[in-house]
Image (cartoon, rainbow, N blue to C red):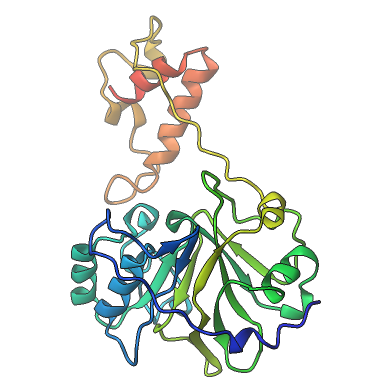
Length: 288
């Protein structure tokens, strides 16, 4: 592999100032983004605001749950849609959970992160990109392993990637793209030898060779048709004039009535499909 000894000696670069809303002039120069300077012992509010103003979507994370890395540990399973750069939202989070860790939402921020656990396993184009030339933004995660940590690249315009390794091989770590996150300074690391520290702050545009080696994110399919009442509604499946609750039934429901509801909703849709219903007719059945 390429020599990575100099990565922890990379110079730091200060962030360009930005306003505090989603339309701000983020710290992006020539396709690059810049990790902000945080100073000594910043508060959660100061740190999250600095990342947001630099163009990164962030989340508060419970430092005592799942090694302090679970992005939904505080705001729930819908976290991919709730990560934010809005300073007013960040103020609410910082007030509610002042001791939270900070998760940086990679895909929504337009970046891909290479989370390197085993630097000695790196080879080929990824090793060349990370450890030769100008490199890119790097945050170390261990004090006892040089080269281990997070390496960030700005995605090519209009391209999104999955979290698969693609043609980059395995054994070195993980790809954090799409709905991937990383925990960032000044968050608390769960291990004694762990520490989140930025050593290089300029997030460079992703090299073309790496982009071509990754796997593109496949958009989820969406219904585009309006619901249409089906001509055939067999009474033995749907009943006459029965609403959605009656169609689904109570089998498998938890105390709140919703725990296993999705399973039976899926079953109802499957029955419709087997009977030859169109997408628009299935939507009608599920919405009445």
